[in-house]
Length: 488
Image (cartoon, rainbow, N blue to C red):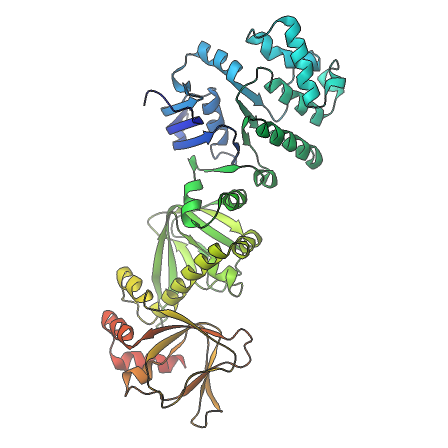
């Protein structure tokens, strides 16, 4: 590529940055692609060492990419000489630092005039007039002739913003601009940024403040030298832009080594996970007691939602494979619950996936030899049925037409009198197989447990799908009937 469209103020194409260290090469950026449009307010977040500063330094020309291209307002920054970069930066970028970087021996107005003098913009008289206008804009004109040490940190940051605006650049880059300020002052500075964006400026802000990050137009989330936004949007493709900003601002990177348990069945459910890199295995316990890999999930998929939305405990064990670890993004319970509750589309999408996973987890302990393709086909045949507390599901003597798996709640199997409870079946148990296997009529009455207020949710398939399940699993009628009886 020899040029870039200026419709994107910032455009990075496959940017790689490698640093030479005594321990060997360190890849700080790994094929970064990024587009920022004019007038956007973008927060860059990530843990220390994730690549945030390197990304910003590459955009501002402080660092050169080892590979790839960097365009700002159509200018190929990666091709500029050192002299050209200094001139270009002075005219096109305003940089705001965490610790202000005001020259201590110059007055506030002289600090604001400095970039104009460096780039030889405006006449001397115009420079001072413009500096005073900018100080007025940030409510610091009455302090113009004081030294930086004579004003507060928040006031110094206002002056630093005025200095960054001195040459009227289209782009402001702010590196932790509120990191050394109290929350009230930080909020005031952020409001000033919002006003500048409203007036047409583009702001790229590195921040650790997740509450502030949730208020911008877009969040760029970096983990291990890669932008991971696409994995979040792929995993939760029903989110709108505002929801993506909110969730991205709350995600925490988690690196898990190979063959490590992320959580175990029965553990308290406290976080939701999106896979960024690597693979995880969902472990289900077979009726014999041995562990079976029920599913393998890869980048762009998520897990952990079942425990958060149903009961508050983990419903399966999840681990990384022995072959490799994984990089995950973790979201706390409160944010995830609010997200699911606030968007019916997202809730329905997650609920649908939960039902599919519930089906797999419950049945794989009985049919462990089904492959992934067979599971996908079978799960499409299951329908979700809900029965109120005490409601009859099947009656003894009725035609047997469906096979049932309990996905939520409990059922009671009744004696011939239709009242006495023979046994109680919990989540994960199944029933209805005897009637399908022997004679085609129900051999017992089953009802939703009367004392479970939410009723019971069942996953059901018809006779044909049940027969296909049996055929695919290569289990005999006697084997499936024996498993059903043992579970009761």
